[in-house]
Image (cartoon, rainbow, N blue to C red):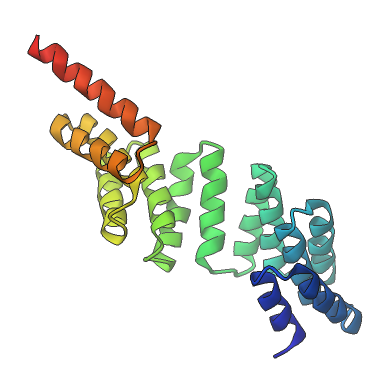
Length: 222
């Protein structure tokens, strides 16, 4: 096992000092190889040392302007600081350079969501879902963008797919409840809100939705 691989394993295990030591050795042994800088940058990002992580990713790019994973790492650094525009630019650059993984499409979609560009986020989250079809969180966020862009039928089908993967996904039930209201299916909405609250008793949005429906039903009975 080479030092980069071992360092990544240490990082995943939370052994940051051991990982840092190995990545430092990699850089000392191969100072013109961007990989060591990228791995050290990822480690620093996990440690929330964004300033130094940025320097390492930029050094990797200086050594190899086509290092797609360096741009991806830089995008994550900006995203973690809620700097969505520069994060978006770096994720797009990583994709232009050939990074074809669900994570980069997912993160780009999230950047656009956070900038309330819901329609623009849809194709990226769709591609992320295609590359990771069993990832319920990617699928859920894809459904959320569809709903926010008023593609309610597609959003409904997507949230139902989320529940197919994880029947205990409270937010998917909540959103299906909201869509049921738009479909004038009050009983269906109430059932989804109740299910969301069964799964997550402190789900405030579901509780509010349930309360509003119950008040509406009371008014009808008067």
